[in-house]
Length: 74
Length: 297
Image: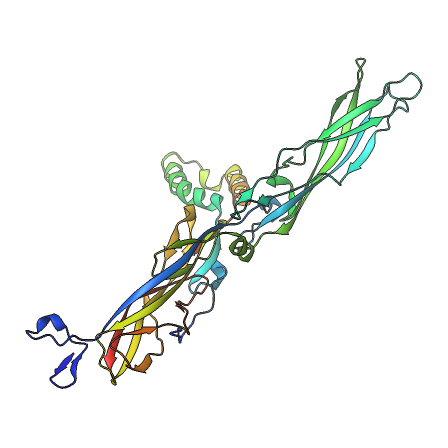
């Protein structure tokens, strides 16, 4: 009695939510977003090449490996 | 809205009229049973370095079994080495529940294993204590239910002799707890609420499960007239987000089939064959009954 004529499918996990997208959260990428503009500015001023620093890339990869999946709405 | 001298009001605001005609009205009575659910047990393992991630939504397990494979080597023991064992039984601990279905952590227990390896004049007596609560840390997880690590440490063999202690501790999780099991074992709380709710977990272990039912009382009816009653219901998504807060979507109206009847008295109670009418209950949604309209047909 008085039941929903358009009863939705149950949402059992985030994957069932329309418009929901699982994304991998990578800490290394996030740090890079902040650090790269700074490195670029330093390189421009004093002529270094911090942007392409090999150690930085290794640290980025290590951070990415450490961090886990997270969920974000589109 | 209209007003007719002969048929009285059809949904009009009775208070506006000098001579009110007593429009038919409805009132609703609700009863709801509410459960704040939380899965019980040991979280499934997680180790991003091994590509072992929590399920979505994450799981918990009621039983944890530790297995110890251990070899102690001491040069002053007879024979020289031999202390090796695998401990499996009795190293299982289980989460239990109180009478209200609330989770009880396993009591602290120590498993003692005694071995007397002495032979001739050598002293190889040994008692080893195993704690089934041992946690190896998620970093050793090989799957969401299996985690193991090895150890290799010095061992005090007595008489100033240092030996070695080598082995593996393995933890296996089993007996998954489920939301349906939580709902079945928990004692619901009766509350006055006009909505049903079953939230969806995302990254946490808690959820809300609330059933709701109602009756509609109609009054100011005119005997012999036909009436159509429609509850006003709306729904929205309900997703458990971070910090155990529920994130709600936008309400949308729910379309239902109206109930029609011929008045045999000035009042009428609408229910479901003598029982309150159940509000829809769908996981991931809240259904809210905000009122009911009545009109003559």
